[in-house]
Length: 282
Image (cartoon, rainbow, N blue to C red; front, top):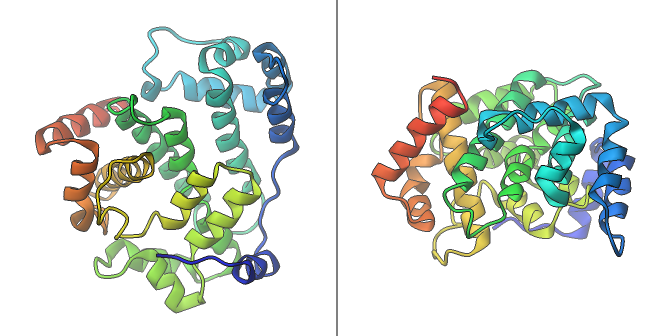
C-alpha cells in the first residue's frame, strides 16, 4: 500500500514541473455545473479549438468506439458522447498537449501511442462489463495511469534506463525500481497530477495504486477492483502486441483479474483476438 501525505505532495510540487490544469477544462466544468447544463454550449466551446475538435473526431471514429457511422461534426460528437464522455476525451487530449513542449529523456510519441492504445483497449474490455462500471472512466484511467512517467522523464536524464530495466524485470515493479533509484515514483507523481487536474478521487487512487500487486488479494468485485482489472488486462494486451511478451506483473495478477471480471480463459482469449483486430488492425 502506497502512503501519500502532505509532506510528500509538497516535495513533489517543489521538485517536479507539474503541468497546470488547462483553463478549458474549468470552462467545461462550469458549464456542466450549471442548473440546466447545455450540450450545445459545451460543443460551441470545444468547436473554437480546431485542433481539439479534430482530435476528438479522430478518437470517436476509432474502432474502439464501434460506431455504425462516421461522426463528422464536433457538435454531433458532443451530443453522442454526453457531458461525461466528451469531458473525458478533452481531458486526455489536453494531457498530451501539456507535455508537448520541453525536453524528455524518453520518446513521448511512443509513450502516448502506448497510453492511447491502453485507453482504447480498456474501452473495448469495458464494453463487456459496462453494466458494472462507467465506461468513460476507463479511457481516463488508461490514459492517465502512467502520467507521472513524462514528469519523471523531464527531471531525470537517465530515466530511460529505469524504464528499460522494468520492462524486462519480472521480480520488481517499476515503482520499486524508481524508489530505489530516485526515492520517489511515477505513481505518486501521477496521483499528484491527477488531483491537481481535479480527476475523480477514485481514479486518482487507482493511478496511485496501479502497480499494487495486492489490490486484488481479497476480491470483492467493487468498481475500484473492476477498473484496476480492466487496466491491468489492457496493459498486458498492449504489451504483448508491442513486445511479444506478457507485461511483467501479468503472471502474478492474471487469475485474480479474470476472477474479478468474471472471465474464463476462453473469454479472455476471444476478447484478445477481437481487440487485436479492432485496435491494432490485425
